[in-house]
Length: 126
Image 1 (cartoon, helix red, strand yellow):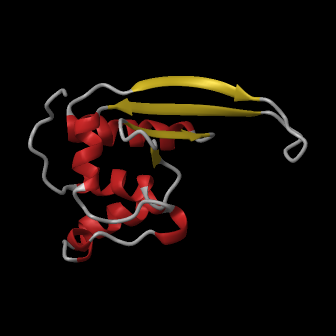
Image 2 (image 1 turned 90 degrees about the vertical axis):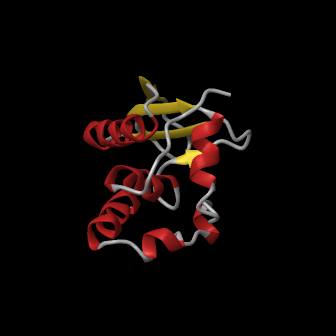
C-alpha cells in the first residue's frame, strides 16, 4: 500500500470530507477509490485540487458523455475525478462516520473545529 503523508484536518480535507459524504462524491465498495462525477467543471477541479493537496497523490481525471435513458431524455457531459488509494480511503474512514447519504453524520472533528473548517465542509456538502 502506497504511503500518504500525515494529514491534519484543514480546509482542503474538510471540503473533500463534505463532498464524499453526503455530497456528490463516494468511496467505492471495495475500499480502494474515492470518486466524483459531475457536470460542473469548477466543482470537479476544486475537489481534485483538495484531494491532491491533502494526500499528495495525483488523481485520474476524464470526461465522459452519459447517454440518454428512458428516465433522462438528454445526454449529459460529466467530469470524473478518481483517486485510487487504499491509504487515502482508510484515512478518510478514520473519521468514524457513515458516508452513505441516507445515514450520514458530521464528523466530530468537524463539529469541534474552527468556523473556517466547518464552512469548507459545508461547501463540499452543498
